[in-house]
Amino acid sequence: MKSFELKYKSFGENSILIEWPSIIDETILKNILLFKSEIEKKISTKNVYLKSSYNSLLITYPIINNTQYKVLELKKIYQEINFIKKQVFYKWEIPVCYDLSFGSDLEYLEKSLSIDKKEIISLHSKKEYRVYNIGFLPGFLYLGGLDKKIHHPRKKNPKFNIPIGSVGIGGSQTGIYPNESPGGWHIIGNSPINLFDSEQSPPCFVRPGDKVSFISISLKEYELLKIQVESKLYVFNKTVTND
Image (cartoon, rainbow, N blue to C red; front, top):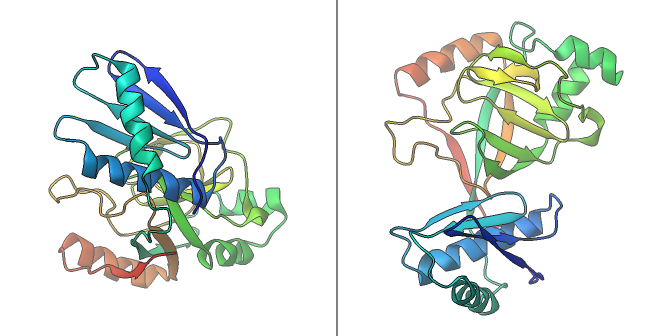
């Protein structure tokens, strides 16, 4: 992994925004997460908030008396990073039912993309996706790696009530709605698992940098897994990955 020429900007009264090149790229993501990890080790983060995104890292302090000093401190940490160091992430298998009762936009995508529904499902479920970010809802995974054949712009008119667990396509990304909410992504299936549980620690088990693969399941399998999830008997299939 290489180092980058970063931009450091004052962001509000007590925050510093660090920016990488403005592209969606796994090398940049890993660079951000490694820098974030080093900051957590070398700066007391009890009262410091760190939030990463596709190409930036926001650091919010309780108070900043000298922005220039803070920037120099951060630059020093970045310069001392061992970029050969391997980072450990998990790969999670997430079951998804692509039945038309869940995939409300599959037929629309079939016509719009001129690709058969079965092919859309196959292209979506055979890929491994990198988790780039978590938001706009708690537990909403922004996943990169969607096959270019099924890229599609978001809806011009979003729906008000997207069901919990809905799996959708938005532009070059795919993701899962962790709660019922408004949304403008094209829905192609549903997962019976919970991606966010406020009673658990951490409430979202997936982290930026992790990988996700979707396992296609039947409607009957979905119903059985839903019972396991609701009974808190479901066990996630995960493996360690450092790629």
